Each structure stands twice: as C-alpha cells, then as structure tokens.
Image (cartoon, rainbow, N blue to C red):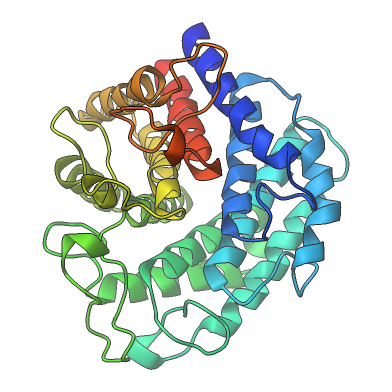
Length: 357
C-alpha cells in the first residue's frame, strides 16, 4: 500500500468528517438526504482500506441519531434512490463491523432488508416495469433508482443467499427490465431516465442528460451479478460502459469530468458528488477482473491518473488544509468546496489505494 496514497486519503477523510462534526443527528449536512449516506459509505471504505478506525464511532451514532429526520426509523423517506443509498451504506457498515468484531452488526443488515421491502412499493408495470423516482406522486422512472435497486438486491443476495430467494428474483427482474429500455444508448452511455410524460421513450439523448454516477452504479450491479452467476458476460457489459465513460466523459488528459464542469459554476450540489460515485464502483470492476484481462492495466492507469490529479490539482494548496474542490484537473476553487467535493475526492483516493497496491 502506498504511504502517499494513504496520506492523501487520510486528508480527504479528515476534511469530509469536518462536515459530520459540524452537524447534528448523524448527518453530514443540515438536512437528511442521500448525500449523508454516500459520505458515510466513503468513510467506511476509507477505514476498511487503511486500517485507520478512528471514525468507527460514527456507525453507531448514525444508527441511533439519523432516524430523527426520517418518517421511518429505517432511514426511509419518499425518494427511492435516497433509500437505496442508505441500504448500500448499511451493508458496508455490517461488513466492516462483522470483519472487525465491532458491536452487533446484524442490526445494520436489518436496515438494508427493511429498505429493500420499501423499494418494492415503487415498482409497477408501466413501461414494462421499473422503479419510480419517488413514492408520491409516482413519477419518472430514472436510471439511478433502478441501478441502485440492482445493487441492493444483488448485495443482499450475496449476504443472505438462499435463505431469501426474493433478492435474486428482483435482481434478475430489474436487470432484464433495465436492459430492455433505451437508457443505454448507441455509445454505451447510460441516459438519465425515461420521459416523465410516461411515453417510455428515453428522457433526452443529449450530453446534459449524461451523468458519471449513472455510468458507475450500473457497474456495481453487473459486477455482483458476475459473482453470483459466475458469468463473465456481465463484466463484458460493464467494460463497455466503462470504456465509453473514459472516452466521452474525460478531459483531454484523461481525467474524469462531469459534463456540467464545462460551464463554470454550473454544477449543482448533487452533481459534485457524481464522479466519486463513479470511481467507487469502477474500482469494484477493476478488482473483479483477472490479472490476465488486458483491460486491467488500462483501468489501473485510469484510477491512478485520477487519484494523482485529485491530490495535485483539486486540493487546497495550503499544506495544512484538507479541502478539495470540484474539478480534478484544477484549479482549486474555495467557493466550489462542499461535502460532495470532499466525498468525491475521498472516493478517488480510496480507489487509488486499491490500484496502487
């Protein structure tokens, strides 16, 4: 493990934890939403990769304090994607605590199971199936909810197995549905979703409807399906999406970009999270490939390129500061810093640790 990359990730983790310490109720910002869930997962990944467990207390704190902002104690609100992010994060918490013999981790897995049951209420046969964006009113079947549903289903299956066959049933169901829609375009890029007018046509086939996190989360589901079924075809599909992302969604020097970055000040708070999420799932694909796969070296180089660029160009130049801004190619912009830019930087640097081993 590279000491440099571990030091870089430690700085990003410290910067991200500042948002947790400044807040209350187990959140990384004042309101309860998915951005706290993904920040939580990034910190768990950091602790698991580095062995630095100084933040492990937040797992139980969030478990106890977080539900105060939700209408359901299992971190459930009206948005199906928000719920899924929490389900995935609590599975990470379960794995981490079980591995390190911390507390009673089964209760964390129980949250993920409860969220899965909630997700089923968002599925109907309009457009042949698919999960809606929100509970009420049920509108808009977007890519992210269904990609996340695939990840939740496959990961629960891998932890529960034949004890509950519904997880694999739904994993296959959402996979089959997703690949029957026009959301994966001719370039192998994932479009944002289907039209809100219920026409079931793709929402908009133009670059402003392309987001890096949509390219990333689907990789997670495909990787898990490949494990479950020992079927390399899922990895072939994942590599097609990854290669399209590297081709179409990077700067000239190969560093990842969110399309909104091309217009200064145009990225909203959510979009600043997206690149980190892509790297989080892209590194899962990298790890799943055998060393004999010719793409593994290419993916390793891409991960390290981005991790190095984050550290060199997106970080505050003050050596005592631990803040990172939006563009991984730089320049550092203090006005662009928030918990999402911190989380994204940490995800890229976590990936760099994996690829740098």
